[in-house]
Amino acid sequence: MIKRVSLIAEIGSVHDGSFGNAKKLIETAAEVGADTVKFQLHIAAAETIRDAPPPPYFSGEPRFDYFNRTGFTVPEWRALRAHCDAHRVRFLVSPFSEKAVDLLEDIGVDMYKVPSGEVTNLPLIERISKTGKPVLLSSGMSSWAELDRAVDAIRRHHSRLTVLQCTSQYPCLAERVGLNIIIEMATRYGLPVGYSDHTRGPWAAVAAVVLGAVAVEKHLTFSRRMYGSDAPFATEPEEFRDLALGIRGIETMLANPVDKNDVSWLRVMKDVFEKSVVAAVDLSPGDVISPEKITCKKPGTGIPASEYQQLIGRRLKRAVKADTLLTSDDLEMKS
Image (cartoon, rainbow, N blue to C red; front, side, top):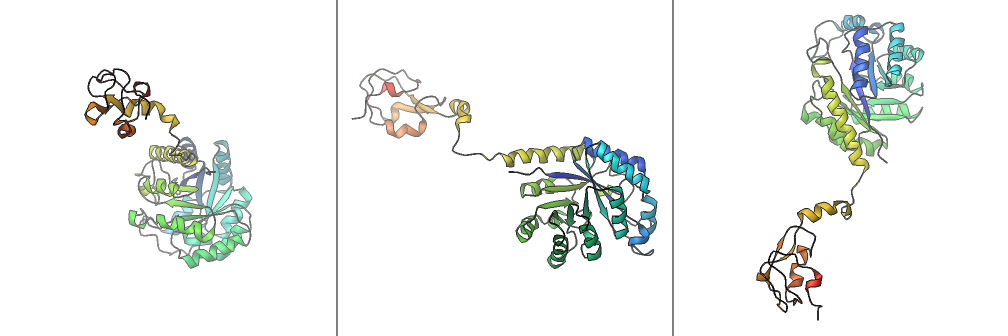
């Protein structure tokens, strides 16, 4: 049975600290087909020193200041959680510190995502695992050995784990997507596998679903012209809607394997487009059929063209006009 793909709209920091934008992004995610929205919970003092360097793709302001400026209060987080419930989307959060996990447990979160940069942070992984909530484990910048340790740490507490193939490049180039790793992960861990997509366009995510991904995460923004670290490589609403429709269509295709030998439902098409044996000239009773006396033409409702050779040498028992389908009743019994 094909499992429904979880389509995650990664809101991340696209809201840029606006509580109103965060709420509207939840609404937009629900409207365009996401069943889960994902936020990031940064508590600057708990996760970074003040002069830690910014990522190469976003250096608009100091990282510590950025996290402080774009964070929400506890009441606002509660309201966002409630807003997800109201719009029937799951509330998924990436915590970047144990303090963030404590806050999320107080608020109530549906599931956790371990972000790519936290795969080697085993104390944080242990804290997340002990909650018993489902976990998505991203692999964006980890080696197999690092990922193995993280998987083992989570499995010690529970098995509700999905491992995500991800490449920590923004935007991710086609040659760095690593679709092969989706298959390797499934074999290596025997766990559900998903894909966290940083490419531009829908094609990597679509390919991941075909290869068996049960969860797909894609950044969502109102516009790629928005300020911030995530918006420039995110997906705009109509693009996300198209992706959602495509993934739901692929689910239907994968859930309905076709038996190539069952062509009964194509009977009308076969009748219209296939060909039958037809008299090439006027034929008289007693004529012996030879190659020049017959040909093959539409429709496919007579003797199939595939039986053409079997008619050679047979004798007619009645007249047949040129350009008329031959039938078994036109032919004498085989001797």
